[in-house]
Length: 343
Image 1: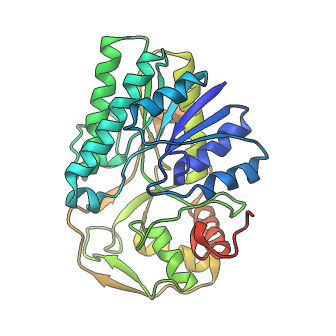
Image 2: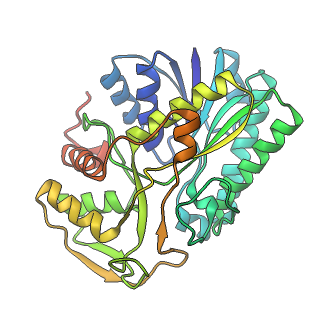
């Protein structure tokens, strides 16, 4: 069965491609590689020993996307593609609205045209907004506070409207929290452009010597050590969650939404200490001011995914950080490392 994965060379997309291939699916990747590296997919082939089709196409290119559907028997879509940096979205809101909304609308129009009405949509916990209510349940009111989060929220609404208009559509929204870690092989992992926006790659880049020290944004939050608490989930657990969601949309019609998280929150300082314990490498850091929009505590209630998808996170924080470090240690410059592991 052929499954189209948009943004398949990205961090979560590439790990999900591994799970899809290992599960026996044929994978078709559509990606414009604007914030990812084609090398990730070469390494997916290395890990799985299986082929996948790759199309370098922007989802806003309707003609190119139609060509992909015309030449393949796509049965379902896992939709990762989109801009994803919260800070950048505040600086460039039109850029985000045009790309994230426009590309998804084009994708849905082409899917409709070719009779493909099964989608797993990569949403985000940012749709919950600045609530201090924890754990976060799927049914609480939504209130995104930045353009990136609003694109996810608007797209959830659009996809629900599509189902109302045509009940043959089946879509599952996956609201995931803070993906970390890497494939256990160390061949693929998180490879941010420039200074990392996320905590774990920032820590690993300090550990490898690319950055001098870690900035901890705020130590005056109402938490046990003053630093922000978040729900971190291993990227491979997340990838398995996408397969569970795919099974659901392929066999049912309707719209469903699930949190993918561990249900356990860890503070920034706890993550730093755990990394030091796992690797034996000290991480120098400095406390700086809070970032606008950050909240004290955010972690998931993953009960619904466990009950309805049969999914739960299996890897702990130590596994996440150990695998993240293995990836960084083997690939100091990410996929651009001179000592590439794939010829």
